[in-house]
Amino acid sequence: MSTPENVSDGSVPPRLGDYLLGQLIAEDKDAWTYHARQRSMDRGVVLVRQKATGCDQPAASFLGDVRAKAAIEHAGIGSVFEAGEDDGELYWTRELLSGKSFAELREGGQMYIPLELTGLLKQLGRAMAHLEERGIRGASLKASDLVLGEHGILRIQNLALAGEREADETARDLRAAASLMQELLQPGLAGTDLFGDTRLGRLFVLMMGEGEGVRLSWTQVANTAQELEQSLASEVREALEERSKASRRYRMKKIGLTVTGAAVLTVVVSALLVVGRRDAPPARDLSGMVPIPGGDYRDHEGKSALLSSFMIDAHEVTIAEYLEFLDALSGMEASQRKVYDHGSQPRTKVDHLPDDWLMVLRSARSGGIFDGLKYDLNHPVTGVDWWDAHAYAAWKGGRLPTLREWLAVVALDDNVTPYVEGWGPVDQSRRSPGNLEIYGLAGNVAEWTRDSERNPSFPMNAKAPVACGGSFLLPASGASSRSWVSTRALRRKDLGFRTVKGKAPARGRNGPGEVAEGQKSGAK
Image (tube, rainbow, N blue to C red):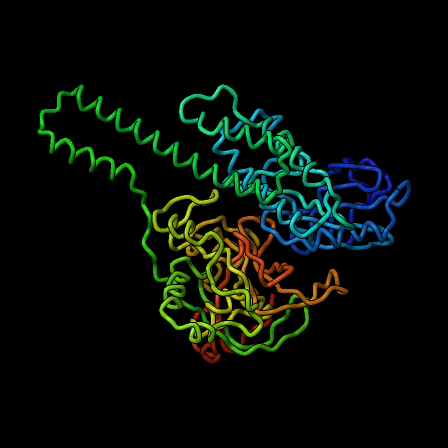
């Protein structure tokens, strides 16, 4: 077979393992980096292939860096899929981040106001703090490593490297981040866009190490950026409301409105309420479950697995449903609440509140935006760890689905697609509905499962918790995808869950997901 024309090194085969090589996008002394496509999952990836000659990095070091990257589990950091060897060729693959890099934004002349940049800096700070707090060594931060996707979601390439973190890494990357952000700051600001220019500039000065000996951590940067973002949002909102009031008063005066002062006040207040009110859909009843018949299914490795029938939620658990759970717990004694906790739950874990719960709930009730995402009560609950999901499922009289149960559902849902639905309510219209009327298998958030298993790509590693399905942050993933996470305590803005219960109706009954008499129930 011929070598792709856009690959510079003539010895490169067009295929490595399960991957078809595409465009060469980067090269250094140790490796080539390509766009590639994984045939079995029909998804785009980035493939890094070690050079066979002239390479300063031995195979052990190459694979050590890959293991360090694969251990990272954070929503803001790109995932590593697997490492492999094909006819002596060492390579590894990582997620192809969706969006534009800071380098592309800069080249395209894209600029942002302080309020927008503080939101991006907050997201970057949280991702980099994940590496810093765990002492993970990383490569230098570059403009091409920061990718801005839909909904203002900022993610970074996986920069982890094997070995001990160097003492100056935080200062090095803070300087780089401040420089990159400053290049995207809108010049010549006016009006409400000006808010925060001085305060953000001061934060940049501190990040550059020019702040009278002040040494910042990434956590401090993230927290400061979040406080500044909230302050700026409030200031801008108040300024716009005042401008709207002034404009309304001028129009009323101009048309010679002749009503009494009390009537004028009533009209103005009513108008302000209408203008300021957001349309927040009420919580819908999304508690339905779909029966899945027992039978012989195939697992992710292609092995036969005999399953009993069960029921699975038609939708991911919503914010409204999780709120009911928290309200129920608040009315119980401590001994009653512990009934729903898993036996392995750490003693230091004293509640089941999701990350940023009060902010998320306020946004969901008002139909507002938090952390770049629009919410209502019918959106999936996220920011929950494995023990939170287990406790909710136990409270509902169910449990989390196993990996094999998840794959059985995908196998039966003939029309389920590999395409991820974007962030939205759990019952949002799907691009290609499956025949089981089960929503969200390929999105809009990944979901906790009950199992911990070994990653077959890294069989020497210990068993780890597994999440299934795609998410709005991983658009290349599909319904059958799975990912291994480092700990059950992990919380991500794109990770939620659904529950399963008991046994579904016996074969032969015409329920949703039922396999008709005489029809094979195995996986596709």
